[in-house]
Length: 397
Image 1 (cartoon, rainbow, N blue to C red):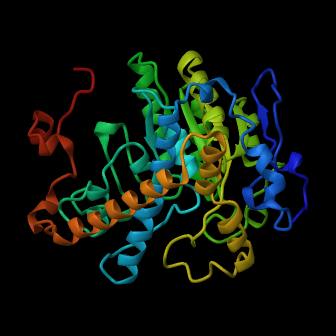
Image 2 (image 1 turned 180 degrees about the horizontal axis):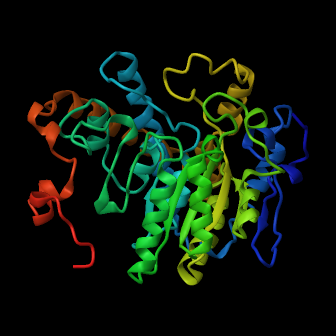
């Protein structure tokens, strides 16, 4: 890895077409962004570079502490879920979001009431960030009827339509045309909003994603594709798996689409970058691609036995000890005098208890009844509409 200077490490590059606007520049992933020999102390001074961005100046002290609470809740929820998964109390897969919490929390914090979220199978963080409760999320991992998908979806299929949260999808890039559809629905109905569609760097080579980009720009749809680039896809480095020039998001130029790449380690940077894209979607009904450099602490899933083969243990430990987004934000809060060490410790303890309580709730909850397997397949059937009873539906009625 390159040993960059602190000034080079946390720059970001922005491209807005047809008129290119440049602001800041950065390598393709957080792993390549930060040299393992680079002292963290040099990088600290650049992490709050976006603190004075207008969207961040609006944050109150309570807002900032709230962002910390959300990140800690996600971390503790996933750590507790990992314990129970390893104890054999859960089935299926478990894709953990540990190390990436700042991306979901920072992004959701700038969303409005008519903005929607859809994501891939690493969906726990986004779910908690939009306001889903730990009980319903944990129960879903246990396959219980009290889960958010009534125990039928598991880790990869959280849903909360009442919170504009549309999953949780297990097929790589399968959510990208669905995100496009959400944006199309907003425009069709004349609603000022945006659809934020999250995907990993491993999904950018799928045909469905590129078909979605083509239609997004062709029809001027308010969709924002957020690439959470942790550098390794399922277990292969970006350099070995993807043809790209500088940034994955730069592929947007092939469609005449706006794009930006920035460091996801800093909540201020995430809010600033996502905020611009949301404004573009709201005011111009134009799509964007955002590439947010981040780092996944665990393997692709808990079943990933090779997590120290495609990357070194030293690299993982370096990011855990020096580039933990929660600790980065904690330092910001302490340096700004927004919160005390004791107050933040209390938040941590509360999150730990909430997570442990949610596991007890899940363990004591019932499993779904066998007959419910026929439910939650077709909305029309469940709600006994004419279309559900006859199989006929006229979309223009």
